[in-house]
Length: 475
Figure (cartoon, rainbow, N blue to C red):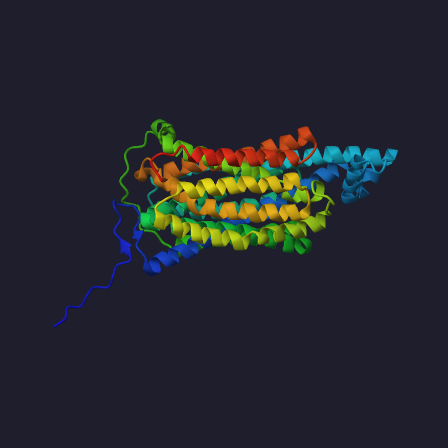
């Protein structure tokens, strides 16, 4: 008589009361990955569509109304930009009225770049603050939905509501305040969502999970940019509404479909909040963690600086300059151009680094390729160069996104405090995203052009690659 073998379990028991199960494979893992990718895509769609298109358009509308008033309100910025290029080339001379409008153009360009950098920079600083705090608190959260779910659901829903306040902000001050609040809420959700990976994924699948997370990030940016570019002509700033709906729905979907085990019986020591806040410094005492943190800061500074002004560069940096409508339509196409190579590099790199058991060469190579991409529009300020930069940068970003999170998880000093330590790790990424646009915006103001942005981005990416060489205990 043959004994009946029990069905294989695809879920392991949690290691401590109130913590998550580990997905070993099968339907539970697939279901988790699907809703994880959707939720991650919705969050990054906000950054791709709103951060990349809607916010720059909103800022430039506010600034245009401030600088071009009265009879100057009918000025054609594309014609003025081409006139400026012709004057600089010595092929024409400005009339008095044209010179007046060119002076307004210079002031408008500087204010537009400076204020957009502040809007995006303050939003990124808000991200930097919230992720470690939420990570620390979520490590200690008791609920029947688990430790992370309350933060994911609340962050997604409140972030969606605040997004509508951004839509109706008529001045730069309100725009800065409400966008910062949106980033606070979204990153409470995103930080907790990211922490579910070390909670639920075994080490031998971290590279694959990291690659799939990168694909979700990339798809979100693409869908966000395409949706914003396609919908803006018809809906104007009401395009904020579908982004808000997607954020709220996917956040709640993750909580309901990838439901975690209850953490009501979670055992945590009495809270000493002074000690807990000091504990933020604990992971930075680890040399490997510190270098990975610094590398992420520099690469994301490069990314933040180079991507902050894409819409404005199409209107003011490349020759010939494009109109606002042309630039708005081309941003999604530039995003689309990076997809094939980026997706392939993510999938190949994620699996390859798992099989080889190596992370550092992939992160170093990705950062170096990202730096090389910055040299193209610096040397050749044209529309084709912008496409080439996006394609090369996309290949580098694909490799980087596929491996960087796995590398960060491997250098965590304390797996029992993964939420805290990943939150601290995220501060480096968020600080880079915050500092990059602000520094780039001030460079535009100081130099009167966007060429210095590419120099900054190139140098920062190379520094990020060099920093990974100092990591010792991970190959």
